Every structure is written in structure tokens, then in C-alpha cells.
Length: 54
Figure (cartoon, rainbow, N blue to C red):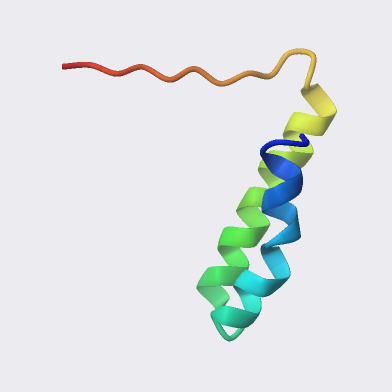
């Protein structure tokens, strides 16, 4: 939370303002908030995996 989601949340308002509160930017913020909510609710079972293929 402290290294990823909290800094992201702190920038939501500035991001919306920078993009004139457009519908698309609002959707991006809403989608990210939903992801944060899922993480907070299921953090004991929630993780990310990144794979790099060549």
C-alpha cells in the first residue's frame, strides 16, 4: 500500500484536474480505485506476477 497504491491515490485529483475531469480520465481513476479496493479486501490472497519472455 505505502509504496504503490497510496502514492497513486494521492495523484488522482491532480490527474483528473490535468485532464479536465474527462470521462475517460474518470474511468481510469475509478478502475484503479476498484483495484485498490480489491487489494485491501483480499490482500492476504492477492498478489501480482510479472513474466518476461524473449
